[in-house]
Image: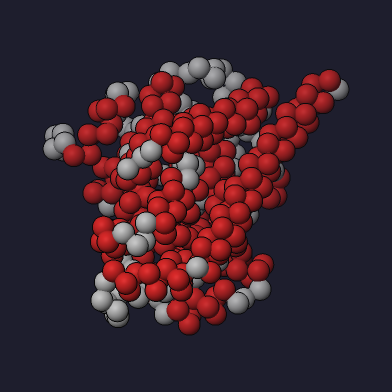
Length: 261
Length: 114
């Protein structure tokens, strides 16, 4: 049940987040554009705005509820003594473990989202964007979000990593996810072998379904497992083969429709 | 020269805002954790109250269980960039804990039963 003060806060955070990310990324996209001819108001931006608002105003409750159900159940499976051992480790060791563990998990879960047809039905929505920018990062089917958020967060919690360790990292990762979708080209030299970038992630969004670059923060997992793709420039075409633009509402129900022949 | 200055300014502006965002989110987590610890400190009294409305030994709410639920809800919230509705849920769970209806709700959150 959502009371009036709760909803005021929801609106504040949703529109405040939109404003903040706009303030961060719009000047970046204009100053360091990967695609100089792409405008801020580009085709299908309204669809992505609806995805943003839908996710923040409505679907996040579904995600919370599902994670709440599974989280406590999963965490109960891990002995408290093991969780305490994790919590007693050095802070920097904990942070390193969280980063590596979440990147490893998201790498394989992401590959799975592309290779397993059932998960691809939901994940495909995210790939239908033919123009990527910071707002396109939010184009996700709600059930795809449940899967992704669960994979990224729950294992670290089940193992007992303290909130203090995770809080800043979670905030950073949320920002990073938006950054790698943005229309920004910022060369980082040799660091490109250890830090991800919009260029690498744009190659993940080419029209081929199994296109590589599945890792999130760092390309190390892709390098390790042979899926690293880095031609040295941004791709020409993005989207999904054979898919044209559709409405927000159609994207929501599409995974449940019979397969087209 | 002016163009380069412009680029540096935009970059610094973006990095500063991003750092402020991360700092705010981390700070919010610390504040909420501090609040929750205060609530945890009252959990013995909470358990005592709970056992008044149900038979003793029917339900045991441990500090660890409470903390786990709080942490999972907080993370889910932050990951989604969504507002802290869960904090209100958490408050209502604690404040209404003596209400027998809430017991069912808490039970559904997989509290440890003994």
